[in-house]
Each structure stands twice: as structure tokens, then as C-alpha cells.
Image (cartoon, rainbow, N blue to C red; front, side):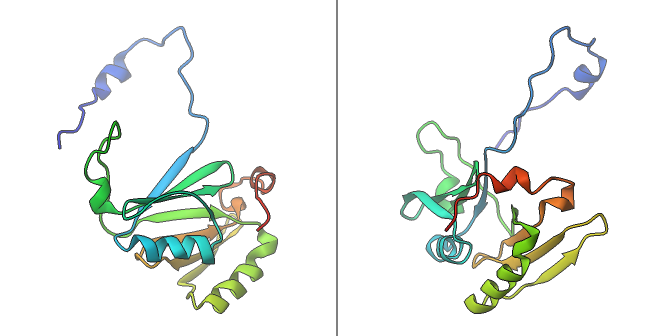
Length: 164
């Protein structure tokens, strides 16, 4: 597949524009790939308790995650264009991090123990905050992290967390 060529030197040499540059408002959606889509989707729905809002058998499962969307795709199916959406995919183990309140760390540890999910690593970051790392059934690295690892207030995430 041919990748677009970006002329970095053109941007570096261009005079400053009078108009402000457009801005990114945040992450709207992010995704991981899982060849064992149903088993992996079950993990996100039943272990992490994300809400499924769209599903296409053997192709994708879409989850609500606060104000954003988490997408899970079968990489073989999405490698092919579908309608107006270009083909996409990845191989190997991916990574995603979900925000959790620090007060719920013990609850997550207990939940993983009950569900038979091994915590692969627990990191207490020098700048503050904690990350729990587990693997989903497709081998992706799933991090549950307190927002303070990036100096972000928990309040940013707390307001849009539905109780489940």
C-alpha cells in the first residue's frame, strides 16, 4: 500500500499563517485487533464491563467508554475496504489504557482474581499514579491506569462513567 508523502521541510520553511491552526479535541475512538473476536469481546464486555452498542458478527464489536468509543476488530476482515471505510489493521500485540479511579484499584485487583485474569505487571509511577497490566484473550496489553500517571485529574473521567 502506498503511503502519502508529507513534505516536512515545506511545513518547517512555511511562514506562520495568520489563521490559527485547527485543533484536535481529544480521542474519539481507539481500537485493537483480535483474530478471536468473540472471545476477546467477551473479555471487554464481561470482565471490564464495557457496554456493547454495535456488533457485526466476525467483523467488529464497538463499546462505549466514557465519552469515547473503543473498537475491537477482526484484522482479517478489516484489512479489506468496506463501503466508504478504507481497509485497516495491525498485527501483533497492541496496547490500550483505560482510566480508573485510584480508589478502585483494590476492586479491580479482586475482580481480576475472581475472573482468573492474571495481573501481568503493576507499576507505581515515580510521578504518581498506578497502572495494572493484563492481557486480553488476543494477547493485547490492557492497562488500567489512574489518570494521575499523566497529571490528569480523575474528575475528567468520573463525570461520564456510567454505573454498571
